[in-house]
Image 1 (cartoon, rainbow, N blue to C red):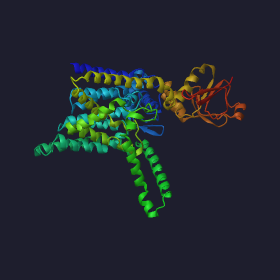
Image 2 (spheres, rainbow, N blue to C red):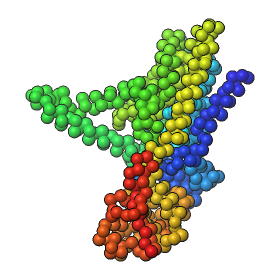
Image 3 (tube, one colour):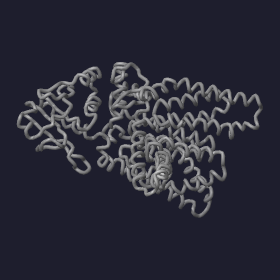
Image 4 (cartoon, rainbow, N blue to C red):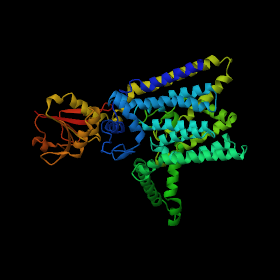
Length: 547
């Protein structure tokens, strides 16, 4: 009963850390959040995506393709709570909280309930997990399905029903985010091999049991293949890997430029240049550098991911407090429970491979590494607690750990609520929200409001924040209006989206109509009023008003 109460408290803590004021922190919806929400809103209202396609299996937006499950999952939340930041982010808050529960159960497959509680607690207070639960990051949803797939796989043994449930969750993961589409190609076969060697112990079972085992695996493979056939078509034929392809193309350009530079910098004969400096050697070097950086102290405990939309920056992905527990847990688990250690280490080793093909450690693409580190951390702390039980330093150690946790959480929350909203504002599409808010406060004073599209997504941002009619929006986007000087702008009510390119000559020529407000890009002619970034005060927009 005591352990159940503790587990319940961990879940409550997880909900608070992920859900408290999630509609205001972060203060704005970034582009992908708007895209997912707008497509879900279109499905709710029209049964179509933003381009008029009925119930698609992938959603085109910003010349990219979104996975279907995150969009369809949003529909009931938007139906209940409206097209609001709270409704948009709530599914991921719940998915991340469910991951705390999943961490407990998957740890419990190998270790006792106390260690499972510790692992789930450290997941609950994880900076990495908390951050990616407070925006609509579909990778968090995909991670939940991925972990549930692994859990039911371990539960199944030769039970075909549980194995099919496992495959269903893996399929959900594939339909939620693109990283598992690569990861599962080698992760699933590894799981099958692990199960055969360690759990089924194929050399000890009868011929009949062996046949049943391979029949179960065969049916499971066919089952997931059938479920994923539409996904395979949309992925490889209809552009479903477009984002990964863009990243891959970028890497290929870097590789090609590096090969040319290295060959030009070498005094070796041309044949040796070709052998030592080619696409394979450079690609392999980049991949290994990216891969091993995933396990660096710098990424784990010091600086983390400095892409400020996806993490806080200059802060480890894990609390520094966890480092000694991780080391102890890794050593003790390998020494005492080899089967569990091999399972979790294999998971940890395979997880960064897809992300390493396209770049450095990245909070979103590298997320499948979780929750493995917390299993080692929980085991390490548990072993230390057992070792010092009833010793003179027991209470001192408890005190140090509690203070360390409070300090780590305090530092995280201070950064997140009091500093991050300022220095990371423009990573979250603050510019368009600032322009829209500025205009909304003054719209009754003007007949026309022009907002520059210098920062991409301004039109969509306006539609999402104002719950614009989807059909009217679709018509406006496909039928831009043409001004007297031939410029095409998108018109939503009295709002026009596009740049008027005001210089001193055009300003005096009266290009801006009477009774108009124009929120212009920074490069246009000087104006008396501006909108500036909250962090360093740099110019974001110039403001022009006509009477």
